View 1 (tube, rainbow, N blue to C red):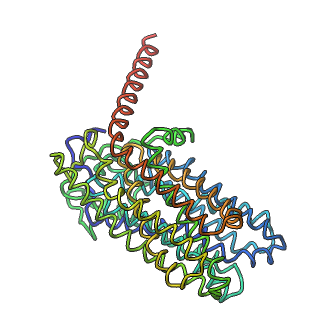
View 2: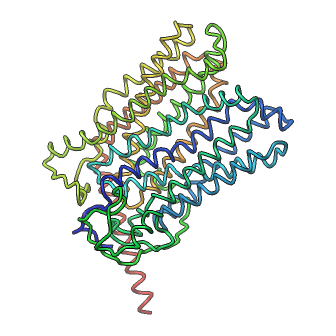
View 3: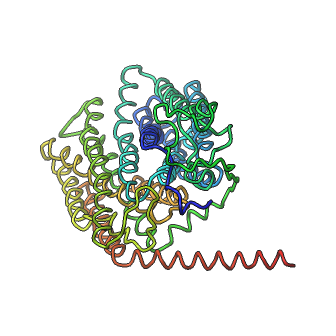
Length: 507
């Protein structure tokens, strides 16, 4: 589809905000499902008549399918469309959540249904990356993508509180799964009602009318009227500036190899971006995993409810960061463009092939990475030395802000450098952060038992801070050069493939 002379997107600003808001809530699916489950482990072990170790296996199964889901589905959405994959995954999520609410004695059923639930919930992150990249230019992407991605961290913070409250109030795990089922149904209905198809390989900039079966209910209502007379109810239609082309949507079902996402991790610039983003996600996961053991025992002796509330300072830092970082990214992009004399086109989008996007997205990391290292190490030593309770809680707030900052900045950069396959790029990042987080959580308790929480978090501070700073500076100096070389190599490979196709057709 040729879009060089068209606006980058014909979706109205109000519709773009609606999509971003809807996806922000959809992003809660995976973290809520994972963390709401944690306070229920004793109840599950009792109900299913099995050991804690066996119940912990269901967590491992969830994490495994959390990595597999985007590998299977994200690349399909780039060519078949994002909307059908959203609807399919939430339908699967709803069915599995309902099954879990009704399953009270079968351990095998618990394992299978948790796997299906993870498969349904975990593709949302990668799909959302792609959707926002479909409808926003690089110059305005941060404002929408930043808050949306930060909702994942919010879900991680509030999930244990919800699960603990349900367990305390009802004395049963069943209502937790009913709550997740209701959440999933609401999201499925909302997406069916509002969410249009956005995949650029299918509908271009949105001016191509999709097949009737894949239109949202709002679109079907609107398209009953003649195109020229279509009302802009709630701005749920295209802008009047759109081309209005009715070319048939180009849809293909390409189940690409999962190794395509894995291959992205081994590019020089991608490996550094993924490391920084994933390491700070894992670091924040470790901070949260340390909360129950830190505050439930001596000297703080928190009750179960107080332990849940101990997650709130970190959540406050995350929420603050999700608003500040998105606006900072757009400001930083504008500043870099002015510095390099690069014209910004918010309507048609910018060709960033010759623009130092790495500089624009990673500004301030030089200062914030060392600060984060100090905060993490300080958190470890304050909880080990039993500092007044407000000290580690305040440090949690700061680290929640900083971890979210780094995750957002480098996640947005990853989308920027793979504009044609943003969901595939996001899948590579998701796989990496799942693996790194799983390893970090697996070694947390053994290392803490061996060297203490002070040295454990100091070790995390060194790994994330020093290697993060090296990665950041390398991206600033050589990122654009690596990106250009990859683009040239890809173009040459495509030319060779085209030549081989022509030769085969001639013969």
